[in-house]
Image (cartoon, rainbow over the protein chains, first blue to last red):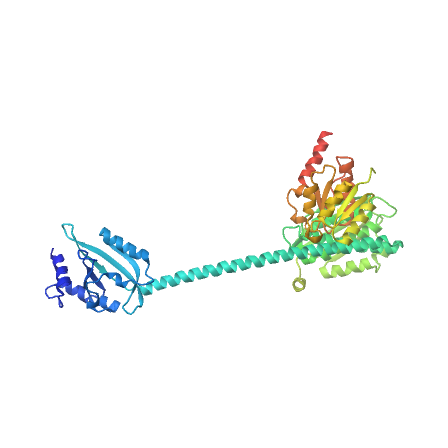
Length: 378
Length: 151
């Protein structure tokens, strides 16, 4: 009851200096803004207000004494917070809530309101006691952080969307270019096929046919490139199988048995066309010279990794390469030599017993110069 | 050789179409029709009842070879084979086609395919092995080996 009386005095009697009332003196002097309201009176008016509260809100004491606290609310005050306070008053319980309040001059501040009922031992509600704390800095910082987070999330989402779209566009472009390259190679082959049919001179016809197999070899490279799991790498071994099968079939020779000894060897994609053309020339040569007069025989192709190198071996059991072919300066031969130079490959032609054995050894990875060249051309 | 296969070619690139016609004829078979759009191909197929249809995927006027295959897939006497630069985009079930030849193809692949399909159509089951450049649909392969089991 003593405490109750003290409140009673400070509020109702407007004791200015709080003599003999240490509680009242402390509350008057504290830097924490505080008010007391009287719910027993109509509209729960303010019955006590300390100087800190007046400093915070900019009001004079006589402007707010006797008024309900709702004058602190303003246009952007959250109705939910107001509702929470009303319910706490009605239920006579304490409440802590951050609420946007307004000073006398209309400027807003975030108020960390703590309010609790003062209830007598008999259970009668006499007062509400409320403290206010300006936490604008904290709330603003929180809001700023929240805004920044949302801003960044929006930016990340936007950037992700842009990247997905760019990737989709790139994929479509690659697909389109791939399709065009393959169709165009097919058209070049079509032209050669049709022109060949109109030529009656056997040697001119042979030259056209050789050209067709070269174009077809390049076509097969392209076809395999985009069928594989990795468009950057090219498997020489599986290509060799397809190429040799095609060439034997295309030669129209039926008595030639193909034998393969293949281990996977993946090379960078820029090596694929020269490797393909070189193999095409060598196998074509064997088919042309090793088995004259429709002689039957065996052609064996080996592809093997060898450390940082790999080997391609083409062995036939035919009549042996005529000296004029080995030593010739034919177009095919010159093609083989310049492709070998490009690939840093060594080629050894050895007479077999019988037939001919050709051993090619070449580095698996591109030299920096080749790789740079490949990059420039993409 | 048994009776030549009657072939319809749906291909919108004139040069590739000519090459395919030459190769089919060189292999001893007969081209009964050509078409540059899917509608045309379906119409010609209904008229000529071909044994084999070569189907390009992207045809003239934005039409698709897939529509040809979906329309003709239930014709029991017609074998449908895609010939396309988009072979990697053919659905798992080949939409009901028997197989796919990837472009660019070689002459040898077309010759081998003609010999192989001639056996499939005229003297099943085929004794030749499947050509390297022809990828068969699982369902067609199963039907072929089913035929083998019956014999």
